[in-house]
Length: 296
Image (cartoon, rainbow, N blue to C red; front, side, top):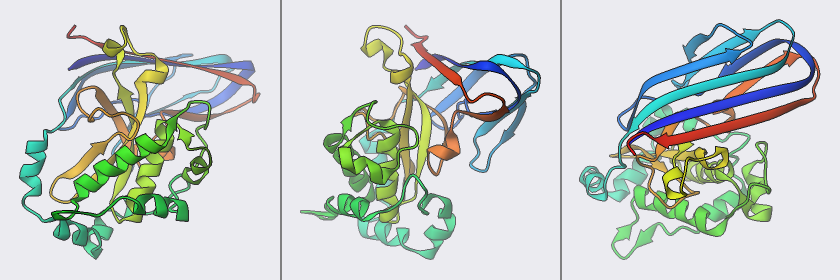
């Protein structure tokens, strides 16, 4: 699928501000599942961009606006070609090389811990509390054929979150921690991703937070707006398969409708736009995202 994406972020300040220093993580990854063919970034007031890769390999653009300004606008546009998710047959081919017992045992080895330390340690957003342990423990690790595969356990976890929690944009905010969400059983994609990550880490499964876009415009009669398009999901490491994607918010497999921007331990590592400035604390944020299928 060939997707055209436009992402506009506008800050409006009550009074002029100065010395604005910012980082943006809005460049799609290029990997075996997607390719970013072009991207354009513009800043108003005009600013030079400094580009680098962060610790997790995400592309970062940094810039500063030192002079007085009452508005800051960041515009990005990009074209990304995506592929379908791997079929169950393709996954089974790799999983057949290692039994479920071997996979679960390997995850508990020092070799696994050394390789994936960053994605096994808990964070502020993904603390492994007693509620998380109980929640993850309710997923059966066995069936009539013996131990459940790591892949099947992860799929069951994603389904359990989607089934037992209600999507409610008013219930949480960007600062909500996993432990807080159990009180209301409500949240958004960010919260569901954090819960799945915490549950995975409780069972020694390396997992990471993914930020990106989810194209649903053609399913709803038009292009996707901000709430529909900007999305978060999870990648978990499955022995024999590698990093596999799971979306605890939506039923669809993570395939050609998903565009990955980057990943980290949790939301804090992959905030799309963040920065500091000198001046008034009164500001208004406007964000608009449009995703279109160029093949239509």
